[in-house]
Length: 275
Image 1 (cartoon, helix red, strand yellow):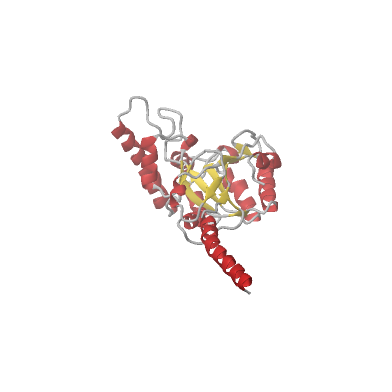
Image 2 (cartoon, rainbow, N blue to C red):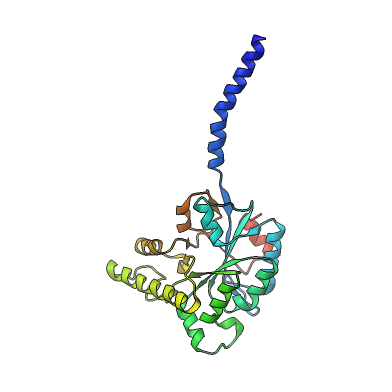
């Protein structure tokens, strides 16, 4: 009888000791989040920054087959702020530069699979398209009206890819120019960011949900200017994000994997361990 009581007490004590450990482990659990970075969807061009409509279709079909659920950036933000949950296998899509073919080819395909995406637009390219005739579907950018339409569609969230800093010269993206004083660098950044933010609000009725570094390039000054202004930031560091619920600072360095259009769907996904 004593042995039975003693055994019960030992088991009870072990349970009490083990519960906090299990709770701590649960709190430390991570949710993998692949973020795929697309650019142009083109029938006539192939390359590292181009995918065909057929490839995009195959990608979305294969991701769905592998059990991934497309999530919005707003849902990711909520999770990293400790609110709500993510599906077991979440995946976020982004499209950079604001190509018109994202609307022409991309929108119908995203709707077909119930997918959503963040569209990171470049202000000066959009302004040019808004004031000039489109030559071809695949060689033009979205107008302000078209961006507003995509924002209303419920498929695309709109992000900033700068107004006029998506260039190699005179500065490389948002990085400091050679011999440029820090205060002049900061002033140039803030002027550009204000210009794109104001244009999106006035002409499209939206505020950018995120900022995407042009070329993934930044330095200490530009990183601070960006993170002081935007609550979510996309980089080009090609890794799968590991999210912890409530870890809000992760929003300021969201990694993305470029969708290299020279690779077949399965080979691309397998190479980046998107199983």
